[in-house]
Length: 212
Image 1 (cartoon, rainbow, N blue to C red):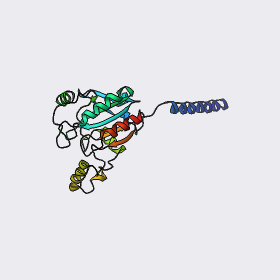
Image 2: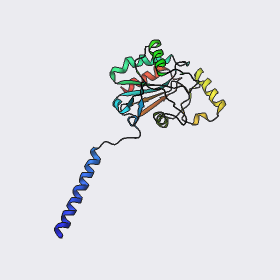
Image 3: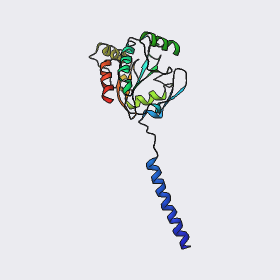
């Protein structure tokens, strides 16, 4: 009986040690990393964002008929400069703001490649606000809430005035306000900054370079 009790006690100690070892060596998913998400590419194939581990990412909701659409040119320039150092842009067309991205994926892709010669990854069209918002963008907004427009900028002041006329407390929710809002992700998959569309692309590029 005594030997049996000693044997059971020894097994308990060994099992506890094994459990401790497994806990220490098994990687756990982190809710503050982008790698937990999957999205659809332009052909509706599943893309696991874990495939981008170790790279700096810029996630942006775009539109082809927007006043900010020329930012595609600066995005492509930034991509060309930093891509070989581990930088990727994930482009998500979105038709929620002024219906300024009305085309099919093929039409949007053709416009971007022919007009701005874009070569970075373009995903399937998504919604970024509301009940049908893509899970990725729900998470991005939680990680980097809206911090306000720069009202010293003319367009920023106009957007602030437009939104405040509709809702005086609009700046207290984290919703994406317009096309070409950008989220910068570091090499650990964490959101480090949100750029409203009025932020100059030079500032975005400088922030990208600082992470590389």
